[in-house]
Length: 145
Image (tube, rainbow, N blue to C red; front, side, top):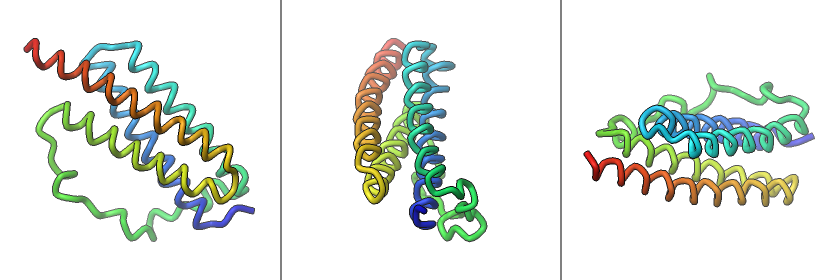
């Protein structure tokens, strides 16, 4: 059985990663109208979900480890997080959120399955590459306007 604390960390960071990638995916889809990049983000989001679901299933408690009411960080919001000036900032902040949470997932899954940690590391580096491509595309679009 996987430690409850590890399950909570995996659950929170899995949600954080998927939510952030979904925000990016929708910007690519509806603002940049780039179906290819949106599909790549969707594939990565689903891949990370499968990896994390493996960990949660191993814990045999799944969502039972979730404690949103008792989470001391649930109401925190930094000044920078409270405001966004444009879609580029939304895109960038959500890429950073996904990358940071993937790093957390990579580290904590080393406690149970180093091969899973390696897969999450590869996901993190794919997200880095997608970030570069997406931001370049966004910059080109902004330069045209």
